[in-house]
Length: 163
Image (cartoon, rainbow, N blue to C red; front, side, top):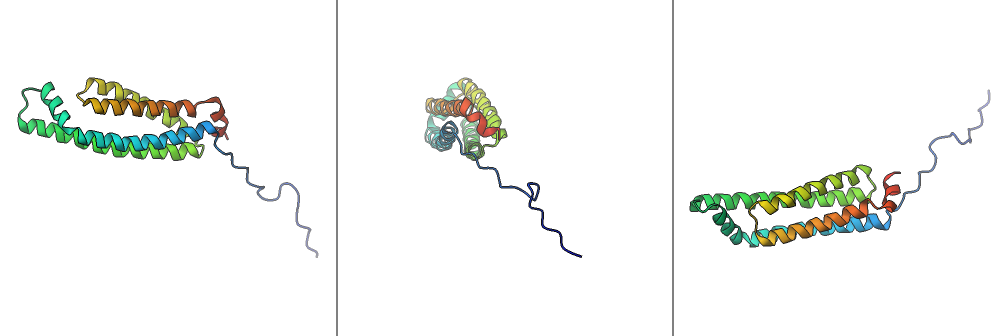
């Protein structure tokens, strides 16, 4: 008996890996903006913590009948919520920057969903008792998110997500 020649045809094993598509400039800009968003969330947290006194004043203005204990409880509750929310937001900004930078199709959609939630949150914060500095930082964060979404959904970004 003899050994057959090895098959050297086109169907032998896996071929070369497809070339990795580099992110277009629009996606790179969006990713950079997402890193800026994560940094701004930290700034927002610092602003919220340093303007805690104005939060106390806003609570008293909205609820003049609150006792000192009730004002303190409301203030601590709001501060705790801000800290947890900021940490989650930083994580989401970083996660979306990573995933969008890799061209994950789901990340572009999820980024848009998170932007929608951010929009609702900003509109709600116009109604809820907040310090003016918090509102300013919130608007800046929203604008950064808007710019990132615009870049993610530019025509030149589409092929990067459709591979």
